Length: 106
Image (cartoon, rainbow, N blue to C red; front, side, top):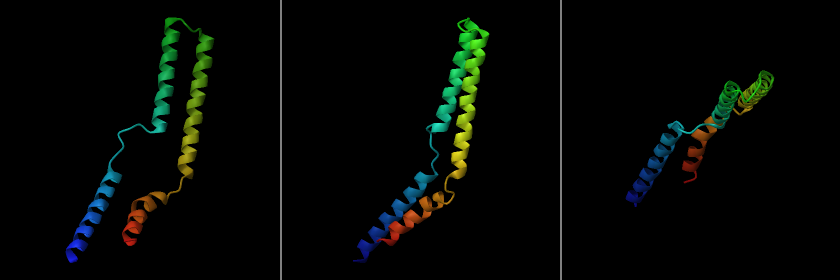
């Protein structure tokens, strides 16, 4: 009977270590904020290219450039506001309390 408990303990220990390993891994994908900022940068580059080619006059270029800059500033201020308001204790809960509660339920 003790062999069964040992096997169960080893399985649980393996799951816990794999859980913490996955948490420590950095995401290789872009976040939503990074994707949006890259999109705005691409729009600015396309706008400058169109201006250099002569498809836009100076007034249109300034208006569109101001609009894109306004979007970038609005996005940055909104994302910084959301980051400042998020719960600071959630990572602690996510990383430690959830695995401990799963262990204690056994």
